[in-house]
Image 1: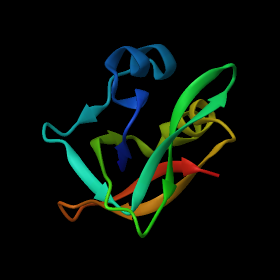
Image 2: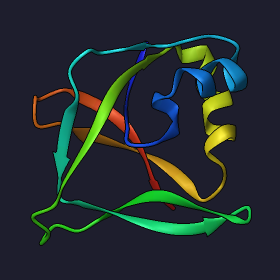
Image 3: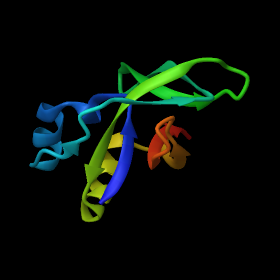
Length: 103
């Protein structure tokens, strides 16, 4: 299983079912990261949230930890699109995760 820190639509069960045909386990407690900001970028005719690094920022991003089967990750990559890339992060609760950020 891949642990993914999600600050957007991947947390939504209806999105999971529609896009991947299954629900993923989401840890019951939210988690947080620092050193990142959220901006809105117009993609595919709509505005989407996207994380960008900002080491000088005091902002905190809240998100959910989603457990995604490794074999599903190519579908998640496709869902996120070319504007995003994966990075390794550590949450404030000391979990190692991946997160999608601005390419």
